[in-house]
Structures are given as structure tokens and as C-alpha cells.
Image 1: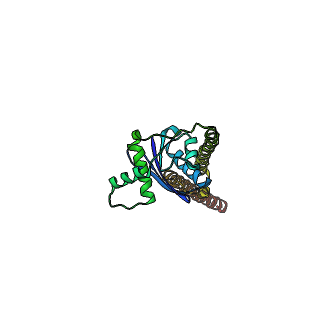
Image 2: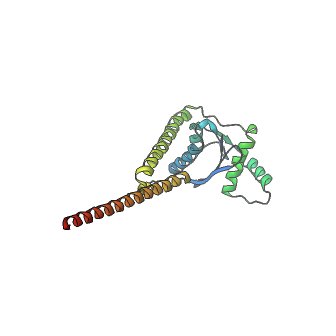
Image 3: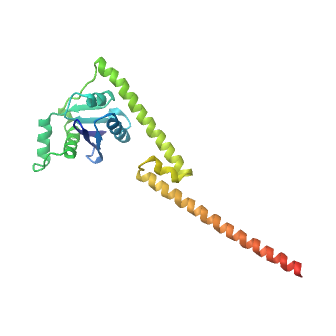
Length: 215
């Protein structure tokens, strides 16, 4: 399961993803537009294989963001500001309100107190229509991730120099790049040694031929 806290605003949303153990998987800030929703969906799909594994806490029960999350198949729990304020005070009474801190509190609430919360349901005709579009969007993101991984894997094997064109690379891919470069250097070293040995042998043969001719 992946637990997500979203502190939303009209300009941007602060997001935190947690594992069941409470470990923070990812923190990010996304814009309040389609591009931001795409980044949010990309982060969630990178942490959970199925929408049913995702539980989201947010201080809202309406709006395009909430509708899109419900339509994507996530379990969305609207949390009242009073509930999150009490939870914030319980965690750190002296801590002031902040976007990253609030996203953390919301993720904690949906992870530890979801039995006291009620998830939203999107069953109206409008919600169903949005659900179709949102899930199509989600499928497109998953397909993009798979294709990106395939391209990275292929480039890591045959054209390492082009990898930076794909943007940020995860640590495991960077390790693969280093290994590929090391293997390439080793092959080049072997080839160079072989070429030098061949040249030396050719020189010896040429010298022997000249000496025979003189004799």
C-alpha cells in the first residue's frame, strides 16, 4: 500500500508518499494544472502497481484534483482542517504550519487513522465520464513509463552517450551506465593491446623477411 498526503492550493500542491511502515518514499511539489496532475500521477504509479493500492488524504472533498484522483481509482479520504490541525499539534506542538509538513501529516492520518475516515465515492454520471478520461490518462502515463524504461535499457547497452537526453536517471540506471562504460573501456583496452601486439608481430615478420633477402 502507498499512502499519499496532498496539501493543495490554487497555485500548487505539496505531496508526500509513504510506505506502510511510515517511510517517506517521495516528496514533491506540483503545479495546479494538467502538467502538475501528470507529475503527481507519474509519482504515484512509480510507487504503486495498482490504483487500489493507493490511499490519499487531502483537505478537500471536491474540485478537479479530487475528482481526477477518485476517477483514477484511488481511495481518496477528505480530511477536515480541524482534524489535520489536531494531528499536527500531536506530532509537534511547537511546529508552525508548512506545506511539506501538512502533506506529511495528511499522509500519516490516512495511513494510521483511515478507519475513522470515510472515502469519497464518484458514482455520478459526470464522475463516471471523468473516470474514463482519468484512467485513460493513467494508462498513457504507465505506457510512457514502460517505453521510457525500454529506451533507457537499450541506450545503456548500445549508446550510453545519449542517455542524458532522457533527463534525470535513477541510481540503478546510473550504476548500469557506469558498468557499461567500464565494460566499453575494458573492451577498448583489450582491442588496443591486441592491435599493438599485431603491429609488433608484423614488424618482426617484416624484419625477418628483409634479413632473409639480404642473406
